[in-house]
Length: 157
Image (cartoon, rainbow, N blue to C red; front, side):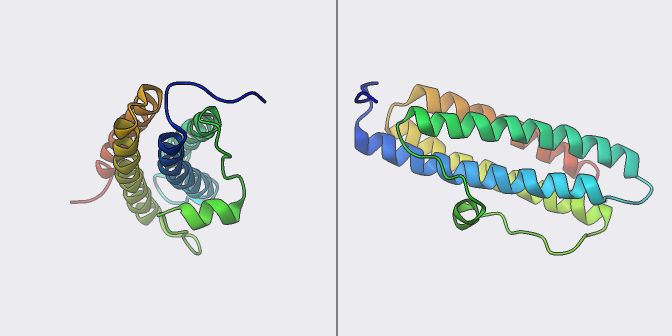
């Protein structure tokens, strides 16, 4: 493969990619958690939550691909194993199967965490003047902020 020359230094590309790797890890962990909850939710809200969780994990699966491809576009290897992603993720795995309201609470927290991870990655992209990564990260922040808001609306006050 020929040398990359997209107007971003190697150091800046590596810095941005590190932020994107953490965003990828959090997104993938949230994808797995959401898919798990989709499979295992029960209770009076079963149908609504089952369908909503499916919408969420499908969107997250597409996001994982977009983020990994941006890392590769920066000429950095994207992490692709459970171990690598787990080591980078700031979202804790859930043991067992929580009840439906707890699932919603956990997913709300997960989406809020991805927003925080996005903010850190966004700073690196802004410092590197990497408009493509800025756009991707900003789009992800909007999705996670909105999803967290919708999930919070389901929780008791």
